[in-house]
Length: 146
Image 1: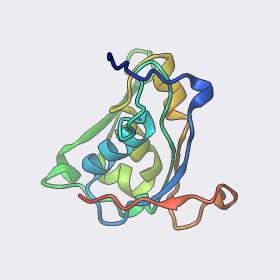
Image 2: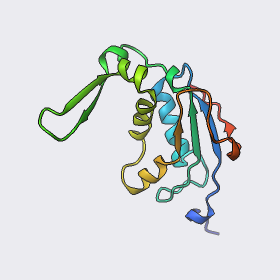
Image 3: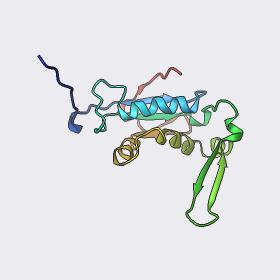
Image 4: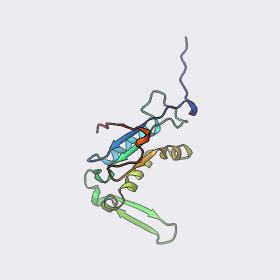
């Protein structure tokens, strides 16, 4: 008897909501765990060409940690496409003034690029503080061991 691989259809996907507390957790390691949950790679029914991941709510991103000397040496770049339009911000500036953007950039870098990646990215909700407006979805606390 031959077994067949289960290929999930987008109508058959069952999604859950998870809450993750980012306080005192390393940025990159936490972002890779979140990317795995968003893409659905932690499920048995993972299908590469279908968005089969879960929704993730991340709280307390202002308290995320950077290891080593990254606070002083790591830079984030934006360019306006005009000459002289390069803007550079250090990780210290980002974590103080734009912690949500910094965390979203870290997760976005670990997601697939293209149409499917943009669809997956929309299931990520990041908040600076401890409050979120998604209590109606009854999210479960996801304990990430780093």
